[in-house]
Image (tube, rainbow, N blue to C red):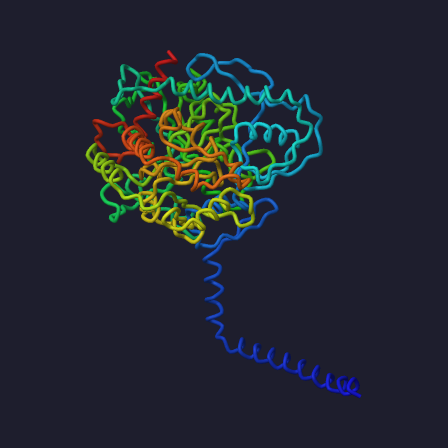
Length: 581
């Protein structure tokens, strides 16, 4: 009987539930109908204006404006941030002419001695998925394992690795180190340039190669107007809170900053016959930036670069030495100018045959191209005088270091084994007195002040690789007297031969990223073992020996005692020109 009663009661219960659902649904519909159409339209406009959809290959990605401009996740217009460095493995060494007219080693990719497996996908340096031959993947992964350069979260399985490759990989590492030694041999110890008949000629390019690109500043990004960053000779708006000489300088402003300084260089000549060095003020980085959020074909992306080459080939100095005595300064990483045939990313500017002899100064070099030379990212401090530098040196030496270490960056939520996620987890569990984390994904790093203040209060600054191996944050931390902690040698050690010491231990700490990834090491515990005296010695070296040469002085600066980053680069270029003769 109880069972029968239960069945009879269950029927009305079901009917009531259905009625309630219908009733709630009708209320919802009536409510929505009561919302004025104008308000609904405003909501749609807000959503549209605060985000942008990027189509890259088969990938659709939405970047919300809260990420703003400094987040490379949206700047790269790709998928999840990651990088993969196409490092070739050397089979043999070819001899050919180098920049200085001597001998250089050319890296050859080994592919013929291994059977070619089925193609597979890899993630390139900007996070895009591209099809590559598994042989190339095999070469890349082997070199990466020895050099500890690239992240391993997405590394493919190694197939058919011969033990004889160990020698080839060792040779590859040797080539990189020899390239850096050659670059360092150009170092000039002079504070002031000794022109001695070695003039610098600045090409007066058609405006479409530089000024017209700046004129497109308001149209490069859908939600941000870049034009303010070109104020004050591309230093950006002043930052009164941080003091005189501080500007909100964008990380990709190297090209106009450098151009402005070269125009005022004491060795500049106006007659090409009096010149030994030729500067080509092509804003190639801005050329790439303007296509980030536009659906353009590769032919369109390459068009300006090809036009420049056509223009240069008509110039007598270019033809005279095949561009060997010409220098280009590019404000983005080398990979952005070396587009893979299977990828829509960037341009092929640096892959063009005509560009192989010239000198390229970039914020991140390709380690296997001897004519690529890394120079510092622009920071926020642009002093006008020696006193400005001295005052800042004293300030950061006396700044109280309230935390042992800090990290300013963003996690990779979909990559749990990414070293960044592990470092953030360790930092958060250590407490603020030990480690402080500034979460850039929430917009906390959009302004310079909190970043610089954090670094000034920290003994050590963690610098794991980001969307590419190098980070602007490295130079922000050095500027603040915060000792950088590297997990990948390519972040700095294989990059900046003119501006950083070859003795890495004098200005940094290196920790093997594999030990962190495998949870064999706690970074805070490792750094606690470094004595106060050791920290002070490292910081003193950074402040007195490195810091002046990492800053780009104001275009109207008058430095007598110090060389800034620009002067270091130009003096060394002139030294290199001397070796060409």
